[in-house]
Image 1 (cartoon, rainbow, N blue to C red):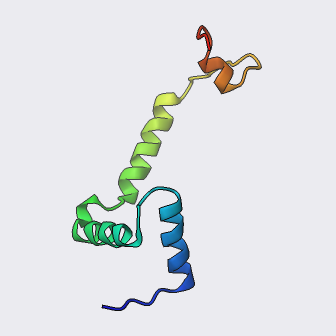
Image 2: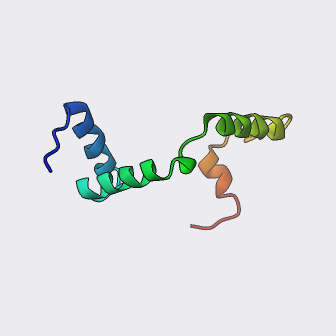
Length: 81
């Protein structure tokens, strides 16, 4: 089978390989076919929006005072390098 890709499609595949998401073009195609054959695992926008709303609700009123520190400095408080 011969498949012709648009430059945009080639770019998407190359980015997926470069980022380590897939190892090869064959791996990319296999992943795409798997995703199509399992539509129940597809992204559900309504569930995602509900999750975001729940996270916002949970963190309401939560404040993190870093006192001028970066997150990295804050994470390493008490740790020795």
